[in-house]
Image 1 (cartoon, rainbow, N blue to C red):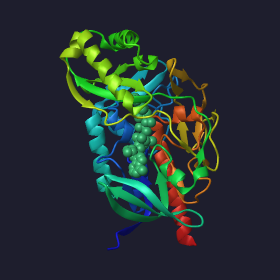
Image 2 (image 1 turned 135 degrees about the vertical axis):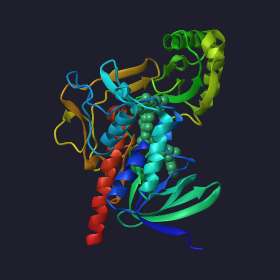
Image 3 (image 1 turned 30 degrees about the horizontal axis):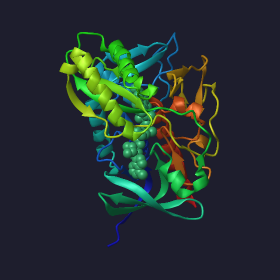
Image 4 (image 1 turned 120 degrees about the horizontal axis):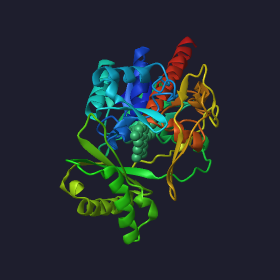
Length: 384
Ligand SMILES: Cc1cc2nc3c(=O)[nH]c(=O)nc-3n(C[C@H](O)[C@H](O)[C@H](O)COP(=O)(O)OP(=O)(O)OC[C@H]3O[C@@H](n4cnc5c(N)ncnc54)[C@H](O)[C@@H]3O)c2cc1C
């Protein structure tokens, strides 16, 4: 049986970047396949139970909520504002973020993908590809321990967060610059009646637990987040390897014993896996390595570079006023495969720039840019 199906574009990965790439590609009348190895959409943002979208705003003191980008990220911003009201606009120190109600955001994206006619392939990991002289011809999926589909397309968008397609196409297709070692995240969502200030109490108590048990010091970087739209709290642990989730669980149990309101809280969900903050970076036609003026950029990041340092915890490097990371088509177009584009946390940038552009708002904007580039490539291929 021939299981091959043909599309204008195949988007690999259904995190926020891949979702937005699909929506924009479909708006441009492209036939779109979205391939995701997990059962549902959302990627890291959903599995870490995010409460705030970063990177949507320029954060200028005189206009703190001026949008960073037009297009799909502005649409999401306006949708949240119209459903949640001004309470979702929040300042965190020097930056502006948008609080959101997680379940309605993911429902909104699911609805929009369905209405856009995007063919969704859940539980489908891309494990192989067919290549031609200048680019990728098809990808093969592996579904529930069985060979899945062969999806043929004119263009491919790598939104896997880890340059999976670039590396599959050619071993030299990733930037091998040594990155600062960044901590990954593992999160637990709880519901309860928190009378005391657990935001300060949790990191303070976690430090004592880690010292007392002689654990790796970075395991003490435990933070919490919550917002006005959900009654839950998210406890975020920082770790280097998957096996350290056992240490995080032990810290969590001891935190519950020492902080009464946390002990009384109900545990709702845990991340299915750990999520790296850094990424393997694909090699594009140009590498984004510095900020510049913010005029005329197709996609912009004003967010500070955020490093989760193994020794020091979170560190922020802010951009000067009136500058941004200006993301252009060459930063989302592969240097080696003519019909491959990237978006999200893994674009052609140095690790220091990646530490800025990986936030949700910017991932959405690069999803849009990758889809525009793919649409242009399809137009050219149809002409010749
Ligand atoms: C602990 C932590 C806290 C954070 N907090 C915030 C925050 O508060 N606010 C904010 O804005 N940002 C935050 N971020 C950053 C942000 O969540 C991510 O960088 C962003 O969600 C990345 O989106 P993405 O679409 O690029 O990648 P991902 O969300 O990683 O999506 C990639 C998708 O590709 C799929 N995939 C991978 N390989 C394959 C394959 N071979 N075949 C098929 N599918 C595949 C994966 O399953 C995944 O669903 C945080 C990140 C972490 C780790």
